[in-house]
Image 1 (cartoon, rainbow, N blue to C red):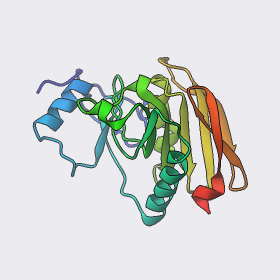
Image 2: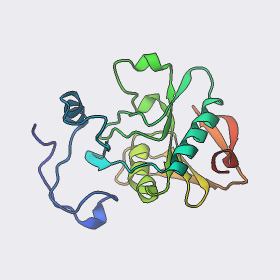
Image 3: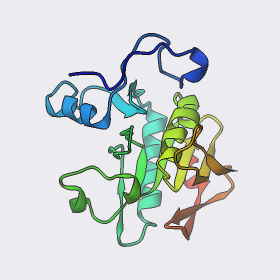
Length: 208
């Protein structure tokens, strides 16, 4: 398989956390899918494609798993008909295929029998974060902002907060979200899909 780009040695200042400062190859989404189809990458390989890089997914400790379950339960019972919740399932973006801790996807699961959801299908994503906090605030946030994912949450286990990011820039030199709000354990975080606030979710429901 030919690489997506010529190798380039980038400075450490230009690299997101987890990307080595050495000669490495970037892959297209099609090449990534081809590696999966051919069994080069399997479900046992803890990687996801972020901005063309194969990035290692970190193991999940018991608090992480518990909060991810609470997050799913809390969000799933609040989303209306016409949406469903995925947990750690891929979404296909232009140069990335992240597997967010949670994503709210338009339609029914059967609508995606032959493809992964793409950017226009995604109402929100959320990452439960402890050891990956730096990556989730930088590389992951940039990936979602570039794809115009409308809402991105970081459920921050270290600071016991929910960071809610809205108003994505879309493609840009440095993609980002224009708005960031931090909600503590005593706060209510709004659940917004399609620009409509559906409900508010007690942060304590996730982190208590």
